[in-house]
Length: 99
Image (tube, rainbow, N blue to C red; front, side, top):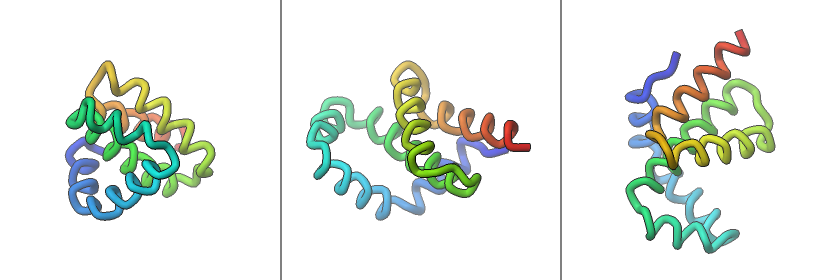
């Protein structure tokens, strides 16, 4: 099982690639920039935890299209909860289902 601490540590070590991904996404969809400025701390947690979740889902063998849908769902859930816990719980549920 994955932990919130493990996920946050991954994000801390991978800030450069997380930021690069944000820049690419912002070029495709400029509304991302306004969201990140409106609620910066929450947005950063959602973005970083979503990047961690993407990496974990790739390891589990999910396609990029499947991962995109899962990230969207976790992001939606995160606005009413704690983003890191939502992503970690989601990944742990996927691991349990795969086993």
